[in-house]
Length: 287
Image 1 (cartoon, rainbow, N blue to C red):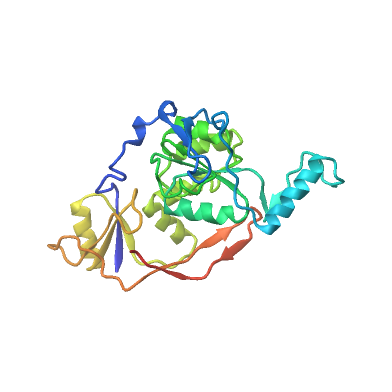
Image 2 (image 1 turned 30 degrees about the vertical axis):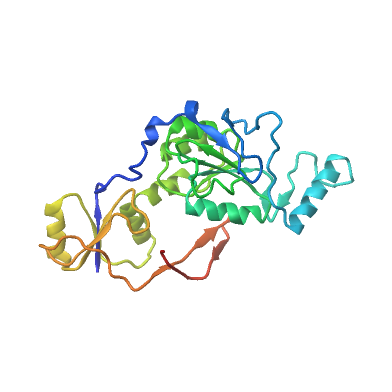
């Protein structure tokens, strides 16, 4: 099957809200209900209203040992570390991890982080997004609004994303200011454009089916003449979880739903030292 890439999306992503209308002036910080259930106007200092208890992450035994070591060190308990060094939990420094987006991937990230006592703060336009209930802190605001993201980043030791539809230009500027963004803005730019992804893979020798870029019906018909049918047509941008994809079985046929047997996912992670870890292949089941 040949894959085509539309130059412009055929739909509007996240139609329920206009991220551009959100700003830091109407953002607020929400504490998980299981801790204090209070809400306060956000000044991105992540301090609660006076008298409200600060939430604490669930600590594993190894994390408790690290916290004890840190406490001893602060009290001059004989640690050989320099006072400016940061103790780590499972290889991650004890710092705030800021996540742009609070969807299902953000929720899973928070779940994994809580087992390692890593504090995750999420930024999402929805107050009750999936990650809000288990994040260390949740800030309501637009993750693709430059000013909101810049203010959010000021209190984060590292900034990452759980969805690629963010403002890559802002992330690029933050990197230039010394903010640790993972992945880099240059990587996100490729991820945001499905056609650029294909080109990138092709340039690095990854086997791919035939593909080409189309920008109108005429070019799509030419692709059908060149490759034959069926054709997989995909939106270049703002597509995810199968959204923006359709199959054309013939020139006169309207796009139809893909009749696939199963969806398999492969996750590959690369660390700062360029070491690579491949996770087992899993089947994605949508319910």
